[in-house]
Amino acid sequence: MAIKLIALDIDGTLLNSDGEILGSTKKAITRALDKGIRVVLCSGRPIDGLTNFLNELGIKGSGEYVITLNGALIRNTDADIITENLVPNSFYREMTAFGLAHKIPFNIVDSNSRIITADHNVDPMIYRQAYENNAPLYIRTPDEMPEDNIRIAKGCYVGDAALLDEWEPVIKKKFGKALNVMRTENTFLELLNKAVNKGAALKILAEKLNLSSDEVMVIGDERNDIEMFNYAGTSVCMGNGQEDAKKAADYVTGSNDRDGIAEAFEKFVF
Image (cartoon, rainbow, N blue to C red; front, side, top):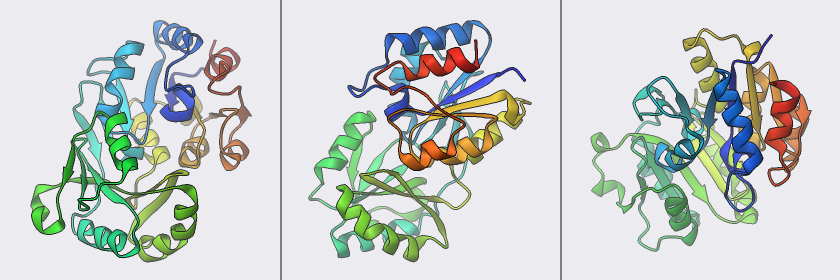
């Protein structure tokens, strides 16, 4: 069955190691769009962290879609919310207290792309997170944030790989019954609504567009892409991808620095 929708992860997939889109990738995506194939960016980033890439690729309008914040929100590219599954606001206090007690940098990202942390000693990694996503950064304790004034898309514990390796099982034990605890990168451990992952969001979007899973191809590189791999009829992992992701994919293409997306498009789309 012909592929009619291609879902692309961003970091480590659409972007090369310099954070740029390769020329070969742009050409492949333009060719797909010209053939009427939908290209959907599917990322852990908020919408404000995707806008520049959407503009660069010419993906725009109310009839085009993005999956943001690891599936918590589906939007059209005019930024209108199509679906959202949020974290109960009461968890801001609980997650913040855990992070402060164990000296693990923590923040939330709300549905409007705002990053909020309670720690006045803001970790450099949180500053980087805000910068890379064009996101405003606020310092607010739970007492300074009325529970009816935030809409939490996800919580983020950040730190070097060794720190998160140590605390990931503890955080999963504490929060895993109520929330989906997901290691999205070596330096990010995210907490989302229990129903949220990229694959679930992609299924919702495909059904909205009257597409079957066999008409969907996904390309990614990390563990948080595996649910997409399991859903789609065609799944491709980048050559630079995480080993579990490679094992879950139908095909391993070239790396994000060596025309991996163009290779996958040539093999499965054109």
